[in-house]
Length: 101
Image (cartoon, helix red, strand yellow):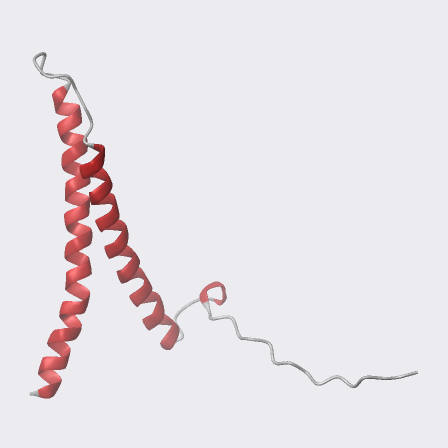
């Protein structure tokens, strides 16, 4: 039962950012469509909804960043990434002797 609950929570942690990214994409798509469709109506002056579009862009970027980071972390653990994406190892400090003259 405990394993089932932990897996459900893990699914929710991945689904919620996906839903945020989807909502942001739909907000941006609707704004672009509404702006283009306003050009066919002579009674309306076309204006782009920058605030709504920016909110959608923010939601989309936040959701995709979280999902991309999760996938990169998982792939690093399983050693699926190329050398470009491997974690940088911190150089160990070598002990050097001081020579005096």
